[in-house]
Amino acid sequence: MTTPTVTLPSLANAATKAGPSIRAGGIKLIHWQQCDRRWYIREHLNSLEPAIVQGAIDHWPARTKWTPLFFKERYAALEVSVDGAAWNLGELIDCILASTPENPAPYLRNQRVANWPPELSADITPMPECTHPNYLESPLFPARVPPTHAEFYIGGAGATFPGVHYDNHHMHAFLMQLYGTKEYLVFAPDQTRFLYPRSGIEANKSGIPDIENADLSRFPLYAQAEGMRFRLYPGETLFVPGGWWHTARIITTSITVSVNGANAGNWSGFRRDFCAAVACTSRLKAALMAPYLAVLGAVLSIFEP
Image 1 (cartoon, rainbow, N blue to C red):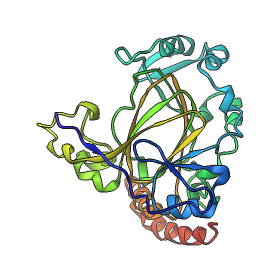
Image 2: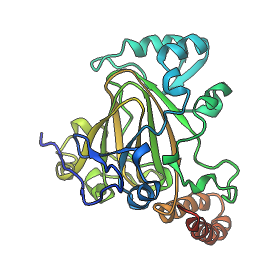
Image 3: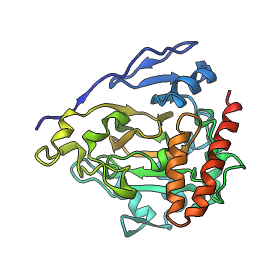
Protein backbone atom coordinates (compact mmCIF):
# COMPACT_ATOMS: atom_id res chain seq x y z
CA MET A 1 0.00 0.00 0.00
CA THR A 2 1.30 3.44 -0.87
CA THR A 3 0.99 5.78 2.11
CA PRO A 4 0.46 9.54 1.87
CA THR A 5 3.51 11.74 2.21
CA VAL A 6 4.13 13.97 5.18
CA THR A 7 5.63 17.31 4.24
CA LEU A 8 6.81 20.32 6.15
CA PRO A 9 4.66 23.47 6.02
CA SER A 10 6.03 26.82 4.95
CA LEU A 11 8.50 28.26 7.43
CA ALA A 12 8.32 31.78 6.04
CA ASN A 13 6.87 33.29 9.23
CA ALA A 14 9.04 33.83 12.27
CA ALA A 15 8.16 35.01 15.75
CA THR A 16 9.11 38.53 16.77
CA LYS A 17 10.84 37.38 19.97
CA ALA A 18 12.48 33.98 20.41
CA GLY A 19 10.90 32.59 17.26
CA PRO A 20 9.20 29.24 16.80
CA SER A 21 11.06 25.97 16.54
CA ILE A 22 9.90 23.04 14.44
CA ARG A 23 9.04 19.65 15.90
CA ALA A 24 9.61 16.53 13.83
CA GLY A 25 6.60 16.30 11.54
CA GLY A 26 6.61 19.95 10.61
CA ILE A 27 4.49 21.56 13.33
CA LYS A 28 5.61 24.90 14.72
CA LEU A 29 6.35 25.17 18.44
CA ILE A 30 5.59 28.42 20.25
CA HIS A 31 6.81 29.23 23.74
CA TRP A 32 3.92 31.27 25.11
CA GLN A 33 5.90 33.28 27.65
CA GLN A 34 8.26 34.41 24.89
CA CYS A 35 5.59 34.99 22.24
CA ASP A 36 4.18 38.30 21.12
CA ARG A 37 0.39 37.87 21.30
CA ARG A 38 -0.32 40.11 18.30
CA TRP A 39 2.10 38.09 16.21
CA TYR A 40 0.40 34.85 17.32
CA ILE A 41 -3.06 36.13 16.39
CA ARG A 42 -1.87 37.46 13.04
CA GLU A 43 0.35 34.57 11.99
CA HIS A 44 -1.65 31.66 13.40
CA LEU A 45 -5.27 32.37 14.38
CA ASN A 46 -5.95 34.72 11.49
CA SER A 47 -3.66 33.00 8.99
CA LEU A 48 -5.07 29.55 9.84
CA GLU A 49 -1.62 28.15 10.55
CA PRO A 50 -1.51 25.27 13.08
CA ALA A 51 0.89 25.37 16.00
CA ILE A 52 1.77 23.78 19.32
CA VAL A 53 1.84 26.28 22.17
CA GLN A 54 3.98 25.41 25.16
CA GLY A 55 3.40 26.85 28.64
CA ALA A 56 -0.10 28.24 28.03
CA ILE A 57 -1.88 25.99 30.56
CA ASP A 58 0.67 26.09 33.37
CA HIS A 59 -1.80 28.07 35.51
CA TRP A 60 -4.38 25.26 35.56
CA PRO A 61 -4.69 23.11 38.71
CA ALA A 62 -5.59 20.28 36.30
CA ARG A 63 -2.10 20.48 34.82
CA THR A 64 -0.71 18.46 37.73
CA LYS A 65 -3.92 17.28 39.38
CA TRP A 66 -5.70 15.35 36.61
CA THR A 67 -4.35 11.83 36.34
CA PRO A 68 -6.13 8.52 35.73
CA LEU A 69 -5.83 7.69 39.44
CA PHE A 70 -7.33 11.07 40.37
CA PHE A 71 -10.44 10.26 38.36
CA LYS A 72 -10.60 6.72 39.73
CA GLU A 73 -10.25 7.83 43.36
CA ARG A 74 -12.69 10.74 43.11
CA TYR A 75 -15.32 9.49 40.69
CA ALA A 76 -15.03 5.70 40.55
CA ALA A 77 -18.75 5.18 41.09
CA LEU A 78 -19.85 7.45 38.27
CA GLU A 79 -21.51 5.74 35.32
CA VAL A 80 -20.29 6.81 31.90
CA SER A 81 -21.15 5.76 28.37
CA VAL A 82 -18.64 4.87 25.67
CA ASP A 83 -20.01 4.10 22.22
CA GLY A 84 -23.36 3.14 23.72
CA ALA A 85 -21.94 0.86 26.42
CA ALA A 86 -22.34 1.75 30.11
CA TRP A 87 -19.26 1.67 32.32
CA ASN A 88 -18.43 2.29 35.94
CA LEU A 89 -15.68 4.91 35.69
CA GLY A 90 -13.37 3.10 38.11
CA GLU A 91 -13.54 -0.08 36.05
CA LEU A 92 -13.06 1.86 32.84
CA ILE A 93 -9.94 3.57 34.23
CA ASP A 94 -8.50 0.14 35.12
CA CYS A 95 -9.17 -0.99 31.55
CA ILE A 96 -7.58 2.18 30.15
CA LEU A 97 -4.45 1.70 32.26
CA ALA A 98 -4.11 -1.84 30.89
CA SER A 99 -4.74 -0.76 27.29
CA THR A 100 -2.32 -1.79 24.53
CA PRO A 101 -2.13 -1.03 20.81
CA GLU A 102 -3.10 -4.65 20.15
CA ASN A 103 -6.07 -4.50 22.53
CA PRO A 104 -7.04 -0.85 23.07
CA ALA A 105 -9.48 0.06 25.81
CA PRO A 106 -12.69 2.00 25.10
CA TYR A 107 -11.94 5.69 24.60
CA LEU A 108 -13.90 8.05 26.90
CA ARG A 109 -14.20 11.12 24.71
CA ASN A 110 -16.12 14.36 24.15
CA GLN A 111 -17.16 14.59 27.80
CA ARG A 112 -18.61 18.03 28.52
CA VAL A 113 -16.84 19.28 31.62
CA ALA A 114 -19.97 21.22 32.63
CA ASN A 115 -21.86 17.92 32.97
CA TRP A 116 -19.37 16.59 35.51
CA PRO A 117 -18.84 17.67 39.15
CA PRO A 118 -18.30 21.46 39.24
CA GLU A 119 -14.85 21.29 40.80
CA LEU A 120 -13.51 20.00 37.47
CA SER A 121 -14.51 23.23 35.72
CA ALA A 122 -12.58 25.18 38.37
CA ASP A 123 -9.49 23.09 37.59
CA ILE A 124 -9.39 24.38 33.98
CA THR A 125 -10.26 28.03 34.58
CA PRO A 126 -9.50 30.40 33.01
CA MET A 127 -8.95 29.17 29.47
CA PRO A 128 -5.42 29.91 28.22
CA GLU A 129 -4.78 33.17 26.42
CA CYS A 130 -3.82 31.31 23.26
CA THR A 131 -7.53 30.43 22.79
CA HIS A 132 -8.44 34.12 22.57
CA PRO A 133 -9.93 36.17 21.03
CA ASN A 134 -12.96 33.88 20.85
CA TYR A 135 -16.02 35.58 19.37
CA LEU A 136 -18.22 32.71 20.55
CA GLU A 137 -17.74 33.93 24.13
CA SER A 138 -19.09 37.38 23.33
CA PRO A 139 -22.36 38.27 25.16
CA LEU A 140 -23.56 39.48 21.75
CA PHE A 141 -23.33 36.00 20.23
CA PRO A 142 -26.94 34.96 19.42
CA ALA A 143 -27.19 31.57 21.08
CA ARG A 144 -28.34 30.48 24.51
CA VAL A 145 -25.56 27.90 24.65
CA PRO A 146 -22.53 29.00 22.59
CA PRO A 147 -20.82 26.07 20.80
CA THR A 148 -17.58 26.53 22.70
CA HIS A 149 -17.99 24.23 25.71
CA ALA A 150 -14.91 22.53 27.18
CA GLU A 151 -14.68 18.76 26.74
CA PHE A 152 -12.24 16.19 28.06
CA TYR A 153 -10.94 12.83 26.84
CA ILE A 154 -9.39 9.90 28.73
CA GLY A 155 -7.94 7.01 26.77
CA GLY A 156 -5.34 4.27 26.83
CA ALA A 157 -2.47 3.28 24.58
CA GLY A 158 -3.63 2.33 21.10
CA ALA A 159 -7.01 4.06 21.26
CA THR A 160 -7.87 6.30 18.32
CA PHE A 161 -10.35 9.03 17.58
CA PRO A 162 -13.01 7.63 15.21
CA GLY A 163 -12.06 9.14 11.88
CA VAL A 164 -10.44 12.14 10.25
CA HIS A 165 -12.57 15.28 10.51
CA TYR A 166 -12.53 19.02 10.91
CA ASP A 167 -14.55 20.56 13.71
CA ASN A 168 -18.19 21.52 13.20
CA HIS A 169 -18.96 24.94 11.72
CA HIS A 170 -15.29 25.41 10.75
CA MET A 171 -14.50 26.19 14.38
CA HIS A 172 -10.92 26.33 15.62
CA ALA A 173 -9.93 23.45 17.91
CA PHE A 174 -7.61 23.92 20.88
CA LEU A 175 -6.43 20.57 22.27
CA MET A 176 -4.73 20.85 25.66
CA GLN A 177 -2.69 17.84 26.74
CA LEU A 178 -2.67 17.27 30.50
CA TYR A 179 -1.36 13.72 30.82
CA GLY A 180 0.37 11.28 28.50
CA THR A 181 1.24 11.52 24.82
CA LYS A 182 -0.84 11.61 21.67
CA GLU A 183 0.10 11.42 18.00
CA TYR A 184 -1.82 13.64 15.60
CA LEU A 185 -2.28 13.46 11.85
CA VAL A 186 -3.30 16.81 10.36
CA PHE A 187 -4.22 17.84 6.79
CA ALA A 188 -4.69 21.34 5.38
CA PRO A 189 -8.00 22.29 3.74
CA ASP A 190 -6.43 22.01 0.29
CA GLN A 191 -6.14 18.25 0.90
CA THR A 192 -9.91 17.83 1.19
CA ARG A 193 -10.47 16.04 -2.12
CA PHE A 194 -7.92 13.38 -1.18
CA LEU A 195 -9.79 12.60 2.04
CA TYR A 196 -13.16 11.71 0.49
CA PRO A 197 -15.43 13.93 2.60
CA ARG A 198 -18.92 12.62 3.25
CA SER A 199 -21.95 14.42 1.89
CA GLY A 200 -24.55 16.59 3.56
CA ILE A 201 -24.31 17.46 7.23
CA GLU A 202 -21.33 15.10 7.63
CA ALA A 203 -19.19 16.90 5.05
CA ASN A 204 -16.65 17.62 7.79
CA LYS A 205 -15.92 13.89 8.16
CA SER A 206 -13.74 11.73 5.93
CA GLY A 207 -15.35 8.73 4.27
CA ILE A 208 -12.17 6.70 4.80
CA PRO A 209 -12.99 4.42 7.74
CA ASP A 210 -9.40 3.61 8.75
CA ILE A 211 -7.00 6.35 7.76
CA GLU A 212 -3.94 4.36 8.91
CA ASN A 213 -4.85 1.38 6.72
CA ALA A 214 -6.71 3.01 3.85
CA ASP A 215 -7.92 0.72 1.10
CA LEU A 216 -6.42 2.47 -1.93
CA SER A 217 -8.52 0.40 -4.28
CA ARG A 218 -11.55 2.24 -2.82
CA PHE A 219 -9.81 5.54 -2.02
CA PRO A 220 -7.03 5.92 -4.60
CA LEU A 221 -6.72 9.70 -4.20
CA TYR A 222 -5.62 9.28 -0.61
CA ALA A 223 -2.20 8.19 -1.89
CA GLN A 224 -1.69 11.82 -2.95
CA ALA A 225 -2.55 13.32 0.45
CA GLU A 226 0.11 15.42 2.19
CA GLY A 227 -0.13 15.98 5.91
CA MET A 228 1.75 16.47 9.15
CA ARG A 229 2.27 13.77 11.77
CA PHE A 230 3.60 14.76 15.19
CA ARG A 231 3.22 14.13 18.92
CA LEU A 232 1.66 16.26 21.64
CA TYR A 233 3.11 16.13 25.14
CA PRO A 234 1.84 17.14 28.61
CA GLY A 235 1.54 20.90 29.08
CA GLU A 236 1.18 21.58 25.36
CA THR A 237 -1.78 23.05 23.48
CA LEU A 238 -2.37 22.13 19.85
CA PHE A 239 -4.09 24.79 17.74
CA VAL A 240 -5.94 23.22 14.81
CA PRO A 241 -7.40 26.00 12.62
CA GLY A 242 -10.97 25.88 11.38
CA GLY A 243 -11.28 23.66 8.30
CA TRP A 244 -8.11 21.67 9.01
CA TRP A 245 -8.62 17.90 9.02
CA HIS A 246 -7.22 15.95 11.95
CA THR A 247 -7.33 12.77 13.97
CA ALA A 248 -5.32 11.30 16.83
CA ARG A 249 -4.11 8.06 18.34
CA ILE A 250 -2.94 7.62 21.90
CA ILE A 251 0.67 6.65 22.55
CA THR A 252 0.51 6.46 26.36
CA THR A 253 -2.46 6.78 28.74
CA SER A 254 -3.80 10.22 27.96
CA ILE A 255 -5.99 13.02 29.33
CA THR A 256 -6.85 15.93 27.04
CA VAL A 257 -9.12 18.96 27.28
CA SER A 258 -10.52 20.66 24.17
CA VAL A 259 -12.39 23.87 23.46
CA ASN A 260 -13.58 25.42 20.20
CA GLY A 261 -13.32 28.99 19.04
CA ALA A 262 -13.86 31.51 16.27
CA ASN A 263 -12.27 34.82 15.43
CA ALA A 264 -11.53 36.88 12.34
CA GLY A 265 -9.56 34.03 10.75
CA ASN A 266 -12.42 31.54 10.52
CA TRP A 267 -15.47 33.75 11.08
CA SER A 268 -16.74 33.64 7.50
CA GLY A 269 -16.65 29.83 7.43
CA PHE A 270 -18.21 29.62 10.87
CA ARG A 271 -20.97 32.07 9.96
CA ARG A 272 -21.83 30.15 6.78
CA ASP A 273 -21.96 26.77 8.53
CA PHE A 274 -23.74 28.03 11.62
CA CYS A 275 -26.47 29.73 9.58
CA ALA A 276 -26.88 26.60 7.46
CA ALA A 277 -27.46 24.60 10.64
CA VAL A 278 -29.99 27.13 11.89
CA ALA A 279 -31.77 27.01 8.52
CA CYS A 280 -32.52 23.33 9.09
CA THR A 281 -35.11 24.40 11.68
CA SER A 282 -35.91 27.97 10.63
CA ARG A 283 -34.97 29.56 7.31
CA LEU A 284 -36.30 32.91 8.48
CA LYS A 285 -34.12 32.86 11.58
CA ALA A 286 -31.09 31.92 9.50
CA ALA A 287 -31.80 34.73 7.03
CA LEU A 288 -31.92 37.25 9.86
CA MET A 289 -28.89 35.82 11.63
CA ALA A 290 -26.53 35.90 8.63
CA PRO A 291 -26.25 39.71 8.36
CA TYR A 292 -26.19 40.05 12.15
CA LEU A 293 -23.22 37.68 12.43
CA ALA A 294 -21.45 39.49 9.59
CA VAL A 295 -21.74 42.79 11.48
CA LEU A 296 -20.82 41.16 14.78
CA GLY A 297 -17.64 39.71 13.30
CA ALA A 298 -16.66 43.06 11.81
CA VAL A 299 -17.22 44.82 15.12
CA LEU A 300 -15.35 42.26 17.23
CA SER A 301 -12.40 42.23 14.84
CA ILE A 302 -11.83 45.89 15.67
CA PHE A 303 -11.01 44.91 19.23
CA GLU A 304 -8.55 42.16 18.37
CA PRO A 305 -5.06 42.98 19.72
